[in-house]
Length: 145
Image (tube, rainbow, N blue to C red; front, side):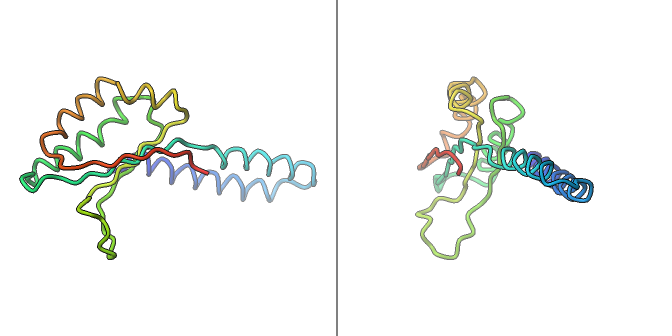
């Protein structure tokens, strides 16, 4: 479901191995400070998050919703401007979801990348798949901190 998540986990594992390896090999304070500074830069890269939540019509079937999920999940392979993607189903016990069941996070490295994504033909084709089944949508974008 989340190809990018597996990549992220492998990347994190590689970074942890690198950190462990480097901490054993680096003997001077200067090298340690330089390495630490480089790692902070890598780990602090901000991402523009595009958060999308769906509330489906009561008439939407399981097959309709699966088609929407598959179409959205296919976008990262069709739009290079997407730097990361994940999604999931609501499982909050609080009962405050207002009928929204699906949440999608689409990440970008820049606002220019988001500007490529929004009018992209693949995104427009996805909206065509989604629209007949959608009762409501909420979208928020923010820069990660």
